[in-house]
Image 1 (tube, rainbow, N blue to C red):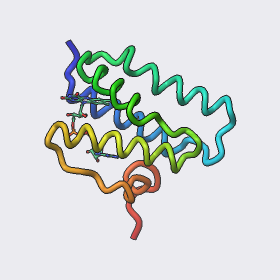
Image 2 (cartoon, rainbow, N blue to C red):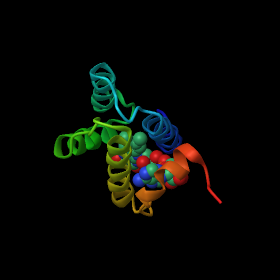
Image 3 (cartoon, rainbow, N blue to C red):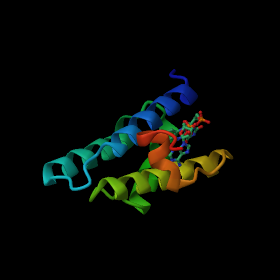
Image 4 (cartoon, protein in one colour):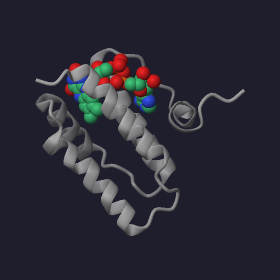
Length: 106
Ligand code: FAD
């Protein structure tokens, strides 16, 4: 079975980086593709309890794909819910661009 920790780190890296470079004004097609990507995860993610948990979260709080800012904020909040569940520290979502897009600013 996959290593749930390294799979998780790799997947969060992919998702946060993809959100960081998603358009601020996405076309309807881009929005639909992003929704398809996120809705596919609970079906396909190869950690079944993680996948089920994510499916419940997406139902409670559907992804906001209207803009880069909204998507990054939704993803950060969702990742933080998983952090809380696992006893990990909460990430400050005002630093999401610094972490995943711009890098540290002096
Ligand atoms: P990770 O949580 O993997 O985070 C990687 C990096 O992202 C951090 O070092 C930090 O720089 C940054 N970061 C942290 N929080 C945020 C945030 N809120 N917003 C933006 N950046 C942030 N594991 C389980 O044991 N049970 C589960 O049910 C489970 N469900 C998961 C569901 C999904 C969709 C994913 C992608 C992963 C899931 N995992 C689950 C794995 C778990 O979330 C972690 O990825 C894994 O435990 C490794 O944790 P980590 O401490 O290396 O940091």
